[in-house]
Length: 77
Image 1: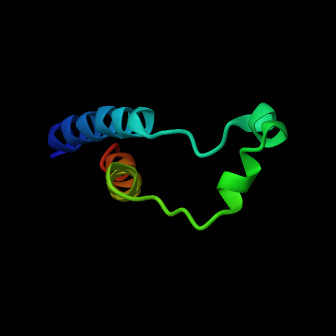
Image 2: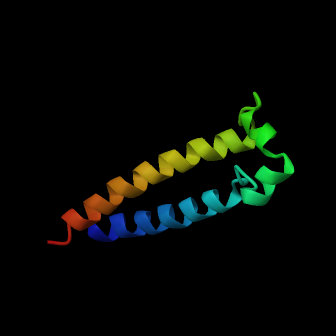
């Protein structure tokens, strides 16, 4: 049981890292705020398409990561 949880946890870790790296940045930092990108952030644009999907997948993988980590810690003893 412990081995199976560890393998699944490793797969979830790699998937979570990849999904986070695939997401586009939400802001351009200080230079973007000075350059006028703040209007884009305040506007009525919503995340659509692949960004919305990646956001939902990130939440699911993060919750799964926390649950598997707690299970792995429980089965250590």
